[in-house]
Image (cartoon, rainbow, N blue to C red; front, top):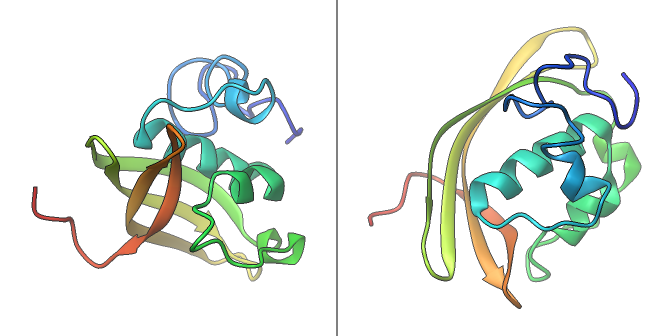
Length: 136
């Protein structure tokens, strides 16, 4: 898989219709910024697929961003993203998703997460994982 092209020309890596360039590529490659938590989540998934550490760090809340290295991104092949639900508030938002992957040993797995996003300087950033969907 190349760094900018989707392996499926009809869908982006994040699963949305349209090419990578017209979907998440505009965020990772063209400098646009996601307008809502779900778009940010999808673009971050693509960053994991493409191993774009700089984009992941740029879109992580500064108070919770770990010292992410290129080694952290190796060994996992991300296969599919299923967004189960999302909600965007004024300053906080949430996305529940399942990310399907294959690990270094070739074993399939899933990451099921509820992610919290915060708006910082009028831009959404990933903040943290929650145990359950928050009460609205």
